[in-house]
Length: 281
Image 1 (cartoon, one colour):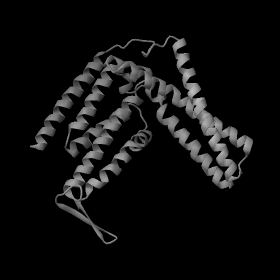
Image 2 (tube, helix red, strand yellow):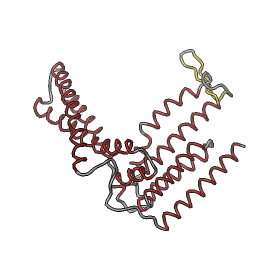
Image 3 (tube, helix red, strand yellow):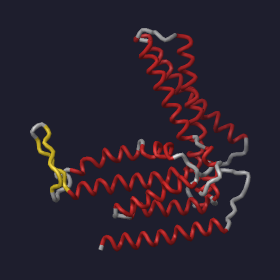
């Protein structure tokens, strides 16, 4: 029983640690790298161009070059590649991979036979069109997610929210993002403290029926406490003058470096668009 409880404890603490590391990586935004030194408005606009480019391009080789550019920007911005890859390859890209798997087979994507899999007497045919279609889809998702994550890592939270408002993103959407950012950390702390309190009062060994009762009671209490905490956080924000608009201590200022970056991205965008159109022909 001790071994199982240690496994549960390691799983809970490991998940909480991963979420904290993934969501609250503000130390990367404070580093002196290439992207951190850019104006958040220019950076947000150029990364939007990168994401649009990844969505529009239908050539896998060009997409891979765009992804390589994203990894290069991460290195120039002093982002640990292990941390970055772990954050960008989990959840959405893996989910998109499972979505793309059915498109491999001739049942969903008829075309030229690429491979035949004999599974329990059934022959599953992988088509060339299905394989490259699935590969294009997954590569496109990974590239888009990587640019979005890189933008969030290299930009301070409040600066990113203010940049979104400058681009006319609805206030209610920005306010919800700000609330979620503040609340998720507190929610994770509550889960961690609740588990520690249960372990200190109940011990490591407990009958499964009592354990189910303890878990059920704590789920109900956690929901109630979360609701109360949500109201308290919002009221605390209002009492400090929050009116739905993100506030930072300094105004945005553009420099020659920002305009050079914008010019480079526009030229790159036009060049990749031309290469993509030429490849389709």
